[in-house]
Image (cartoon, rainbow over all chains, first blue to last red; front, side):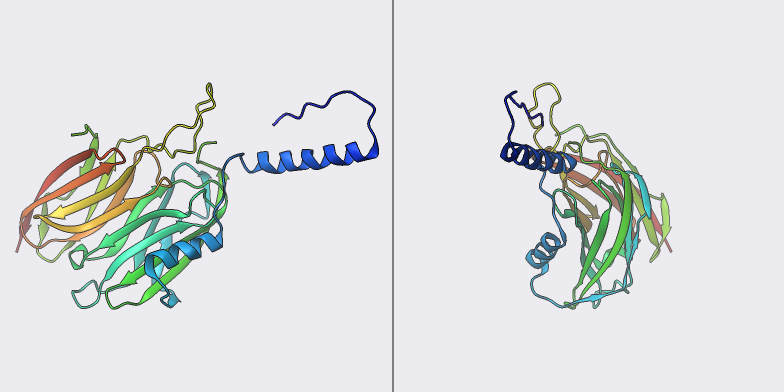
Length: 159
Length: 110
């Protein structure tokens, strides 16, 4: 964003205006123009969309993520949900969210009792340092969640 | 059918009831739709694989919906419990509706 300023006598009001727009420009470039970020609220509304108004309890999910990710383009991410994975009690789906990516959804995984283990690993993109949120839903209707912070050195979403 | 280059890793043999790991890797750019063409300044349209599924002897055991936050050349590993000898069929579906498939055979003993 380049500001073109015509040369003319400047008064106090002009200076204020220029500084203001400069600060705005700085702010928007630092956030990559055109990208709107998600936040914790967006994650919460996404979760609501997927599972409704159920009560979430923390725990039973272990997120495997690096504390510091050097490259935000491929951050290895995995999770394990503590569940017997029988017909009577198994994890149906796990949703992964990133609370500051341009869009909060990362992926949803659907399991069946034939999965044996509610565990999966993949690689994701992260634009900056943020939290990864995992929400697991079982066939009995209970919902579990877990959160893990990941530091990102070089963001990876393309800009 | 789309020509997806995919690699899968499934054990050749497993004991009945054993839970084994399956690893998959597919070659795809996973264009997020946020990147801009540096010359024209236009946004490159989103083009990703949005669905992955694994069927074991015709029954879906694992599936996943992907969003643009999944890295290029998506890697996916998960677990399956060995029940009967047969095949594991994998499929990847992209935004244009093209489907790539690959399958592996497994022998279940005991």
